[in-house]
Image (tube, rainbow, N blue to C red; front, side, top):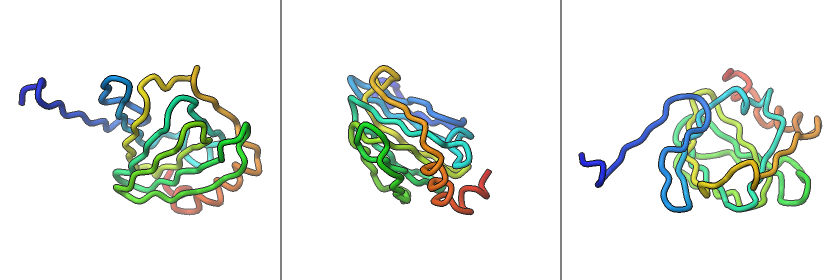
Length: 142
Protein backbone atom coordinates (compact mmCIF):
# COMPACT_ATOMS: atom_id res chain seq x y z
CA UNK A 1 0.00 0.00 0.00
CA UNK A 2 1.26 3.48 -0.83
CA UNK A 3 2.26 5.28 2.42
CA UNK A 4 0.73 8.48 1.01
CA UNK A 5 -2.63 6.73 1.39
CA UNK A 6 -2.24 4.62 4.50
CA UNK A 7 0.28 4.05 7.27
CA UNK A 8 0.04 1.13 9.68
CA UNK A 9 1.72 1.30 13.10
CA UNK A 10 2.05 -0.98 16.10
CA UNK A 11 4.14 -1.16 19.25
CA UNK A 12 4.80 -4.32 21.25
CA UNK A 13 7.52 -3.03 23.61
CA UNK A 14 7.12 -1.85 27.19
CA UNK A 15 6.08 1.67 28.07
CA UNK A 16 4.86 4.66 26.06
CA UNK A 17 5.40 5.13 22.32
CA UNK A 18 3.85 7.85 20.10
CA UNK A 19 2.87 6.31 16.76
CA UNK A 20 0.98 8.97 14.80
CA UNK A 21 1.27 12.73 15.01
CA UNK A 22 -0.76 15.16 12.94
CA UNK A 23 -1.09 18.91 13.43
CA UNK A 24 -1.58 19.40 17.17
CA UNK A 25 -2.44 15.84 18.27
CA UNK A 26 -0.81 12.46 18.69
CA UNK A 27 -1.84 8.84 19.10
CA UNK A 28 0.35 6.61 21.25
CA UNK A 29 0.41 3.17 22.81
CA UNK A 30 1.04 2.56 26.49
CA UNK A 31 1.97 -1.00 27.39
CA UNK A 32 2.75 -2.33 30.84
CA UNK A 33 5.97 -1.23 32.48
CA UNK A 34 7.20 -1.78 36.04
CA UNK A 35 6.83 1.92 36.91
CA UNK A 36 3.03 1.64 36.75
CA UNK A 37 2.76 -1.65 38.65
CA UNK A 38 0.70 -0.95 41.81
CA UNK A 39 3.62 -1.68 44.14
CA UNK A 40 5.74 1.00 42.46
CA UNK A 41 3.06 3.43 41.28
CA UNK A 42 3.00 6.11 43.98
CA UNK A 43 2.52 9.25 41.88
CA UNK A 44 -0.01 11.07 39.74
CA UNK A 45 0.25 13.54 36.91
CA UNK A 46 -1.93 16.14 35.27
CA UNK A 47 -1.69 17.99 31.99
CA UNK A 48 -2.31 21.74 31.90
CA UNK A 49 -2.97 22.05 28.14
CA UNK A 50 -4.85 18.91 27.08
CA UNK A 51 -7.39 16.27 27.86
CA UNK A 52 -5.98 12.74 27.58
CA UNK A 53 -8.03 9.93 26.07
CA UNK A 54 -7.44 6.28 27.05
CA UNK A 55 -8.80 3.17 25.28
CA UNK A 56 -7.96 -0.22 26.78
CA UNK A 57 -7.23 -2.59 23.91
CA UNK A 58 -6.28 -5.72 25.87
CA UNK A 59 -5.56 -6.87 29.40
CA UNK A 60 -6.83 -5.20 32.57
CA UNK A 61 -6.63 -1.55 33.46
CA UNK A 62 -7.80 0.82 36.17
CA UNK A 63 -7.65 4.59 35.78
CA UNK A 64 -7.07 6.27 39.13
CA UNK A 65 -8.41 9.83 39.28
CA UNK A 66 -7.29 12.30 41.95
CA UNK A 67 -9.53 15.32 41.32
CA UNK A 68 -8.50 18.67 39.84
CA UNK A 69 -7.48 20.73 42.87
CA UNK A 70 -4.00 22.02 43.59
CA UNK A 71 -3.24 18.70 45.31
CA UNK A 72 -4.57 15.19 44.82
CA UNK A 73 -7.91 15.11 46.64
CA UNK A 74 -8.33 11.34 46.90
CA UNK A 75 -8.07 8.08 45.01
CA UNK A 76 -11.06 7.44 42.74
CA UNK A 77 -10.77 4.23 40.67
CA UNK A 78 -12.40 3.57 37.31
CA UNK A 79 -12.12 -0.02 36.11
CA UNK A 80 -11.58 0.11 32.37
CA UNK A 81 -13.46 -1.97 29.83
CA UNK A 82 -11.93 -2.97 26.52
CA UNK A 83 -13.00 -0.67 23.70
CA UNK A 84 -14.55 2.09 25.85
CA UNK A 85 -13.22 5.64 25.57
CA UNK A 86 -12.10 7.33 28.81
CA UNK A 87 -11.43 11.07 28.57
CA UNK A 88 -9.40 12.51 31.47
CA UNK A 89 -10.04 16.25 31.40
CA UNK A 90 -7.34 18.92 31.43
CA UNK A 91 -5.87 19.61 34.93
CA UNK A 92 -7.20 16.33 36.37
CA UNK A 93 -4.75 14.30 38.46
CA UNK A 94 -4.51 10.72 37.19
CA UNK A 95 -2.49 7.57 36.96
CA UNK A 96 -3.15 4.13 35.52
CA UNK A 97 -2.68 0.56 36.67
CA UNK A 98 -2.12 -2.06 33.98
CA UNK A 99 -1.77 -5.81 33.99
CA UNK A 100 1.36 -7.21 32.40
CA UNK A 101 -0.50 -8.13 29.20
CA UNK A 102 -2.32 -4.77 28.90
CA UNK A 103 -2.15 -2.27 26.07
CA UNK A 104 -3.80 1.16 26.01
CA UNK A 105 -4.29 3.54 23.10
CA UNK A 106 -3.72 7.19 24.15
CA UNK A 107 -4.65 10.41 22.38
CA UNK A 108 -3.52 13.86 23.51
CA UNK A 109 -1.97 17.10 22.33
CA UNK A 110 1.38 16.25 20.81
CA UNK A 111 3.19 18.96 22.79
CA UNK A 112 2.36 17.32 26.14
CA UNK A 113 5.68 17.61 27.95
CA UNK A 114 7.06 18.11 31.47
CA UNK A 115 6.83 21.91 31.10
CA UNK A 116 3.03 21.84 30.72
CA UNK A 117 2.35 18.93 33.06
CA UNK A 118 2.59 18.49 36.82
CA UNK A 119 3.65 15.45 38.82
CA UNK A 120 3.20 14.65 42.49
CA UNK A 121 4.21 11.86 44.82
CA UNK A 122 1.23 10.40 46.63
CA UNK A 123 1.00 10.28 50.42
CA UNK A 124 1.38 6.76 51.86
CA UNK A 125 -2.35 6.68 52.63
CA UNK A 126 -3.26 7.13 48.94
CA UNK A 127 -0.63 4.62 47.80
CA UNK A 128 -2.09 2.09 50.26
CA UNK A 129 -5.52 2.70 48.73
CA UNK A 130 -4.11 2.04 45.25
CA UNK A 131 -2.66 -1.25 46.52
CA UNK A 132 -6.10 -2.22 47.88
CA UNK A 133 -7.79 -1.26 44.61
CA UNK A 134 -5.28 -3.31 42.63
CA UNK A 135 -5.99 -6.44 44.65
CA UNK A 136 -4.85 -9.87 43.59
CA UNK A 137 -5.60 -9.28 39.91
CA UNK A 138 -2.71 -6.85 39.54
CA UNK A 139 -0.44 -7.85 42.38
CA UNK A 140 -0.38 -11.40 41.03
CA UNK A 141 0.45 -10.20 37.50
CA UNK A 142 4.02 -9.22 38.11
